[in-house]
Length: 308
Image 1 (cartoon, rainbow, N blue to C red):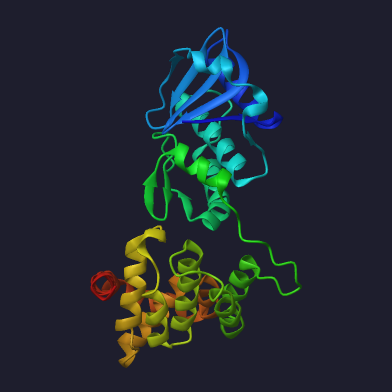
Image 2: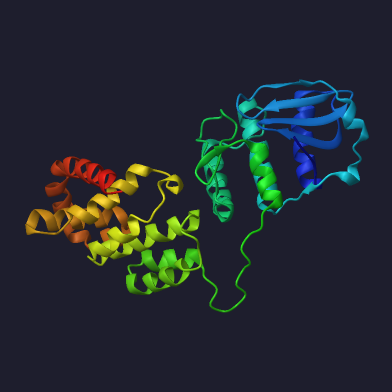
């Protein structure tokens, strides 16, 4: 059981929701997480919400709550990964309970993606979909975890120190360089960063995915295979995509006209800039490849699953 309080901005957001749900609720500014049950301690009653079932109910008052002073509680602040996760939870609760205003599926997806960029430093990932229930699903090291465990981990954990030098790695810049087909430059950026991370981390897998993709574009399929196989499936959103990439690295040898067309078509799927670069050929390419591509893709997935 984890007791905490929120800084002003987060406090106001939770108060606004809870008073709409329970009109007489007055916050005591103390919150509790017990696995996936969230409780807001208040007067004359407290409120609990299941973060799996999206059910809100009154909470039985406990004697020990009266002995806990505000100065004894850890504070979750906005503009921290923990605070951003609490803000995400409140928005998911609003959607699940149909309490206006709440974010639509697109906005929630955008917020989830941005938050996952922060959480990957802790090997934590939000895995809930656009549906409102369960309210939030979390994984740590690829294993399902309850919200209490993850919040405590974020409160206790540390983020790798930022490199303040002029050569600090910028993941977004490296991805843009890759997207612009400046593959050798992007490869150097990703390879230099890879050595900073343990292979058991989410960021290591992410970097290996990019490196493998670059090697595929450079037609260095053996190197692509080496890095794709280092990816941990626990940290990949779509494991069949990983298997597919491994399979393409094995099977797309470019032999003959058919093989070269498949390789070009798959490169178009990986990089829209490459597709634009062959715009004058693409319609004819798609016409030739699409009738046979589904069968080839299935073989790639099957091969990748075996090779991994």
